[in-house]
Amino acid sequence: MQAMTIPIVHHPDYVVPPDPTSRYRWSKTALVRDGLRNSGRRLDWAVPDAMPLEWLNAVHDPAYVAEVLEARVPADKVRRIGFAIDERIAARSFLVAGGTWTAALLARTEGFAFNSAGGSHHARYDSGAGYCIFNDLAIAANRLIAERLVDRVMVVDCDVHQGDGTALLTSANPAIATYSIHCESNFPARKANSTRDVPLPDRADDTAYLAALEATLPPLLDSFRPDLILWQGGVDPFGGDRLGRLSLTQEGLDARDRFVARVAKARAIPVAGTLGGGYGHDIQEVAARHVRSILTFGDAYGAA
Image 1 (cartoon, helix red, strand yellow):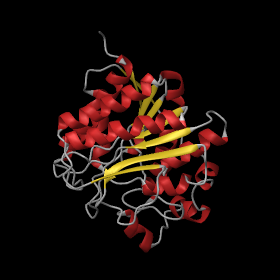
Image 2 (cartoon, one colour; image 1 turned 45 degrees about the horizontal axis):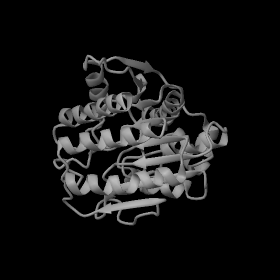
Image 3 (cartoon, one colour; image 1 turned 90 degrees about the horizontal axis):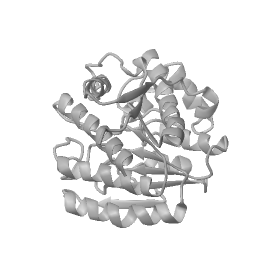
Image 4 (cartoon, one colour; image 1 turned 60 degrees about the horizontal axis):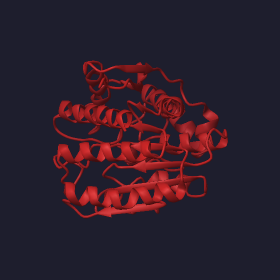
């Protein structure tokens, strides 16, 4: 059977020059783009517009949004984010939020779509954190509801770190549910309350992870009945990830991606995916893991 065409949202300005003073590996985005291009797969590329200012201000403190826009983020917030914000990174943050929004719009018509960046789930109301500037997941969810494109949205966060910012920014909106399966002892130290949290112990393996996912995600989908899923598909649950603490194999990550795709497709729920976390000394290996995750999910959703 011929593989389905996979919609990918990407903007050239997602790629910014590396910062040798930062631990964040900016080259990952370009490597993911190149890996997808060289995969030999049928991909439909879409270029997003920047998220309009009004929608960032609807979720984040307008004073913080202005600090980012004008590249004058104070030092204490820079420390929380993990890198300095110059004009190019500021512009990128608006584009990434627009990319997740574009992926959501494409998912409504195509069934699934992926932003080649995003998943910035630690960003909170008045500050970024953990390599996240604006919470593209919360912004897209809020706009989908506000514009009445859907009645209910669920954020399904499979990154190894809890989606604390997303939970905080959406908790007052009953039309948005949040699900987070993560390593309990990992960042952030102070967890938020998602609609459903699934904390796992250090070194949880494929069997433990998949059992927890299979036991907890379908019941929430069936009780909340979302019209669209925003999926944070980070690959940092992988056992070799330097910021992970879990012990999934590549086969375990593949099984996770296939499971999320199949349970969504079985319920006719469109899915917009974001890149999420993945960290390692070999950044090409990490990027390849992201590419594999996107293609595995797309194949499973298309075949289900």
